[in-house]
Image 1 (cartoon, one colour):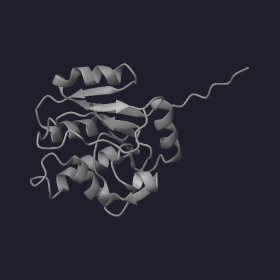
Image 2 (cartoon, helix red, strand yellow):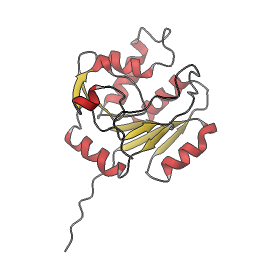
Image 3 (tube, one colour):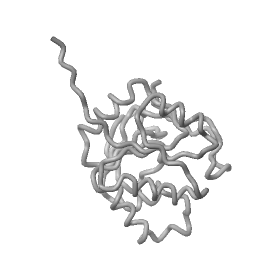
Image 4 (cartoon, helix red, strand yellow):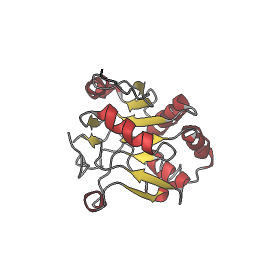
Length: 188
C-alpha cells in the first residue's frame, strides 16, 4: 500500500499587471495562486494590498514575470517546512549562490521580490512598518528595500537553487532596469 504525504500548501499571492495576462496564465496553469492585479498603476500600493490579503497567514509573495522550476510545489513547501519561521528568498543572482549555496544572510541585504516567503505575522508587520518607513519618498517602488530595512540585522534564508527565474523582459516599474536579471542557479 502506498502512503502519500500531503503537505498543506502555503498561501500564495501573485502581483500582476493586466498587460501580462499570458504570464499570469502560465503561472495559474501550473500552481494554485491568488492573483492580485494592479488597478492603480502604483507598484507599492499593489504590494501593500498583497500584504493586506495575506494578513497574519504565512504567505509566498510572487511577481508575474517569473518562470517556475519543475515540481515547484514540492520544492518550495519542502524548504518552507524546514524554515517556516524566517523570511525565505527563492530568487537570487548572487555569485555566492554558486560557491556557498543556501545560506542565512543579514536582512539588510534582501533584494528582489520575484518570489519570497513571509512567515506568520510578517505581512502584517511589514504593512505596519510601511507607515514608519523613512525612505518611501526616496524609493516609491522599493518594496524589497522596505523589507530589507525592516529586517535589519535579522537573518533571512537565500534558498539555492532559485526556484523561479526572472523572465527576460522590460520592467513595467522602471524601463531603465536591465531585462537580463537572471539567476545563476535556476533549474527548469
